[in-house]
Amino acid sequence: MEKTRRNLAKMLSMGIVFPSQLAQGFSSIMESIPSSLSSTEKRALKTNVEALYKKAIVIDGLVIPRGWNEDSFKALEESGYTGFSASLASTNLKVAMAALAEWRDRIDDNPDTFIYATSSADFRRAKKENKTAVLLGFQNATMMEKSIDNLDTLYNAGTRWIQLSYNQRNLLGSGCTERADGGLSDFGLEAVERMNELGIIIDLSHCGEQTTNDGIAFSKTGACFNHSMCDALYKDHPRAKTDAQIKAMADKGGIMGIICLGYMIGPDPGGKTTIETYVDHIDHAVNIAGIDHVGVASDFAIQGMEANGATRENWYVPRLTRFKPSYQVRWPAWIEGLDEPKRYLNVAKVLDKRGYSTGDIEKILGENWLRYFDETLK
View 1 (tube, rainbow, N blue to C red):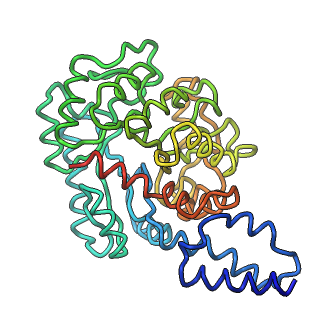
View 2: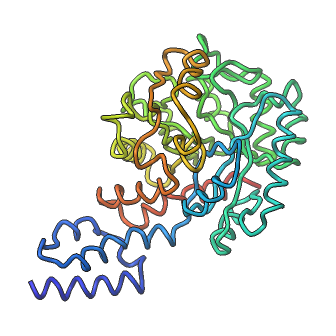
View 3: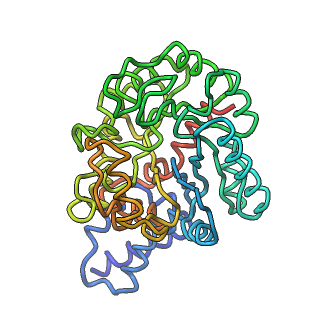
């Protein structure tokens, strides 16, 4: 017993001085620790994940920042985020340009908090300066209207990622709930080519099956699913991606952000669907795509849905008419442990419990997004 205590003390000291050296097998160490350890010793072990999270680069693949307010700033400070991709209004070009201008102004007005991100270097700088990098983009391509030239206008105004379609068909291709999906149109192919040339990330999260397949196949750089989940674990949900799609995406260098929205992860977010179910999707995506191609993504306000005022009446009921029954919208829509600013610290703790190494946890939290930004943004 005394030998175990001495070894534990030695490992703890190494974790404090050299946290990255405590990478492999931390969970197995936890399992082998005798129950007679003092509460102080047990607390010291548990804080290693918190120390890891504090030094990690943490990037949320999709935040809905509409209605940003003082509560959002407070939640951002609590979150530990290094950066996030912001989903802006995309109804038409005028609306999109106004949304870009609004966020560029917010970033300029809060230089101690935000960094306007156009490259992976901006996220690394945000970590060094204890700020948050914001990558601006859209969950639909409707703001392109009928002109490829509008991509240049949007890029020059700050756009760095575009989802080719939302749930319905647009001029580029079909969404995931469209009755028929013919894949990318000629206009869509031309848009993908120009986005590649400019360095605009191609996102396929809401795209229909064939439009997703075409987006992967025709993009010269890796396309991404910046907020999605695994069809193998939640069968036949229109937003889920198949194993074949996940593998094809990864083979071309893309990344999949696992969505935190509860009813997207499982059919019962208020009960049987938990943070463990969420990490099941991470596990599966890692098994199919590889550890370098999986990240995290929330798809709601940074403070969480409940804290941001989502109720059955103002959130759930309207979606029963906006989304088809195949979307399987449920209430409550969130998962305990994910519907809060420290969601990814909670995820890191589950990943650690499942035996992920320090390096692999860091990849999932944000390093994989950095790798992807290195390869796609110009």
